[in-house]
Length: 114
Image 1 (tube, rainbow, N blue to C red):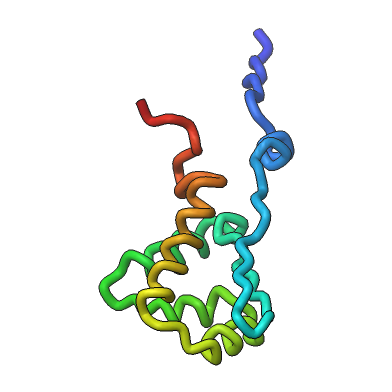
Image 2: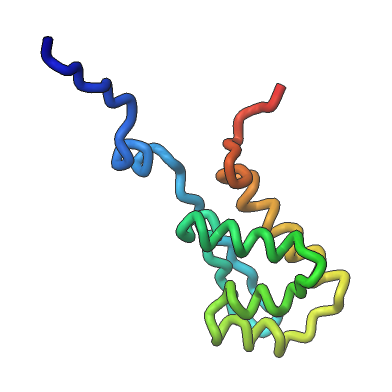
């Protein structure tokens, strides 16, 4: 009796083609400079997990994370803008909500949980 080959239900290429890639979140500063927030969900999974863990950790600082997340020029422009804390906090929340609404949180999709 010949060994049966397992049925392939999904290929990685098909899955990558199916997963939506959102536009990056772009912030326009008062100076006219635009800061582009790269898609954290496009990072390699292990790196993204570590990055998200930092957002939730007690030792996190938004500016340390922004320095890792943004390009050097964008980070410097962001710091130079001297945003008040309430604006900064609201921005970080909106950026994270944007990506969560577009592609879901890691390990979840955007479908209804009901």
